[in-house]
Image 1: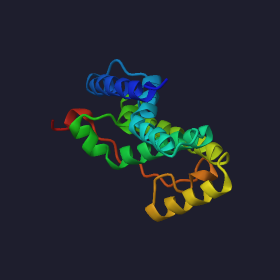
Image 2 (image 1 turned 120 degrees about the vertical axis):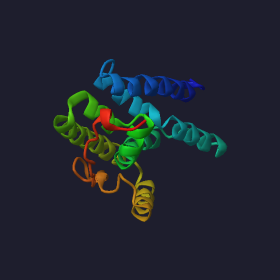
Image 3 (image 1 turned 90 degrees about the vertical axis):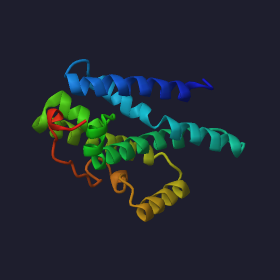
Length: 174
């Protein structure tokens, strides 16, 4: 278990290569693999969080870690929406790009919106498990930094998301 998050990083990098190839080829991608890659993508933050607990000689707070994992998903989604064109051009993993490859431009946008709603609901549920002080400090931090997850503590539909126009993979210069 000590090395679990590092194994997650290794798994993410393997999935990233597989899914980026699948975006170009149109084969070898499933929704399950895409969602797994998104969850694994922030493995470095989870390593850092575990180190912070250890450095403070504190027991790991599982509620905080679960909340942070749900927050990471929303942050990754927001980053991927903002970086979509650049990620396509660089052939990098991007959840929105994968949803468009899986479902097509119109249905992919609808599936992405529904997935965001599910992620917001999971975030809200995990947020409700935080102690009051931690929750208030988190909200203040989100407000000051204008994080992608701001408002998601209210549940599905609480956040503000802008889905960029789809880019045809075949028209992107590599």
